Length: 226
Image (tube, rainbow, N blue to C red):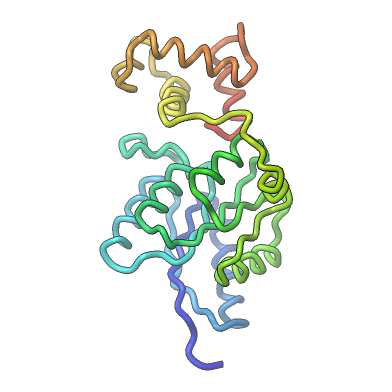
């Protein structure tokens, strides 16, 4: 088969069984293809940031598997895998990213697509080892390989029902963690009136007007924003 092309891979995932599944799939693919894989693993936002910074100084990643719901690193302004993806794309514009998420919410998928520009967005419940392996081959060849939901969204040029900026997401994150309203202006570096205004708009976006903050957080969590 000749000399194999070495692909440096970053797996950003906090579920050990998923990490092993990716690793095993890549080992199998290496046996069947002209690729070999140098695998690196990050299980939370902090370790992902560390891996990215290390790679910037050495050899950039060629391929990334990215989960969206992973433990945050608030001090680094990384609240989810989406923020890691943005950071990675900025540091390594040529990296090919495969997002594999459990969430099907149109707003979240659109946000991921617009902010990270991944080569592939997959839904975990619809993904098998075989389909992910086929996706890897397509992506390494330079093609896009999105799941049906995302392909339809792109074809129809669907706009997100919910697109949150980073301040909105930090507000949800800190408040959900128990921060008091009096603490949020300093944490977010905005005024108290701006905090109140953003919270009202968030309740409108998540269709929980007149309900408790707890209900807002749960609605945001259900759609994958927490």
